[in-house]
Image 1: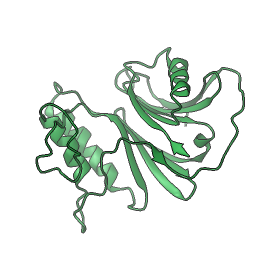
Image 2 (image 1 turned 30 degrees about the horizontal axis):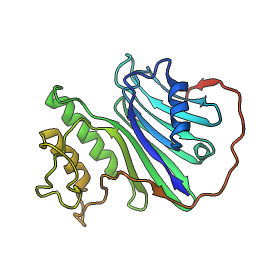
Image 3 (image 1 turned 135 degrees about the vertical axis):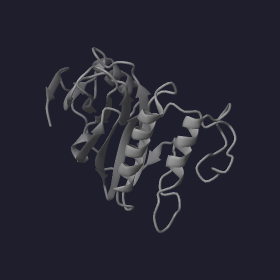
Length: 219
């Protein structure tokens, strides 16, 4: 079957979680990474659409700013093995799909006008986190990375497909550098930017009709 993944900057998720769930159902998306949800603290909740049930994992901060989350459709949500909340701009979930283990990131990079210190802190935390993940686990990144990679590959042929547009900016360089290299013995690209439907073998499960409700608790 086809596992459909998406990423979306929602601007704010307040009062819109069911709306997003309905959109995911219409577009048949199994996993969706959210950015700029602007929710405080962190937690997990169930959100039902008309026919589907989703689990939303999120991480915010003390103020209603930034924030990232990941929607996972049931019954896939039952296969979540672990959650790592790095900061209000970065989190991942570990998901078991048959014999595969996947790490799915939701990432929200600082905008172009933010300070270099803030950008460096984000990209350093991102790179350091990726380096802790075993090579046996597949890494998928859904994010609003706030950079332009441009139309030319210019030395990044192994991670840039040449299908972008416009000119690359410095934040685009940061994206390509993250995609290109994990320092280590091999010195080769271990994770790459990918936009695709991912085909994996999944057991068939029947979804049940559930009443529309939202239930929230802390992890």
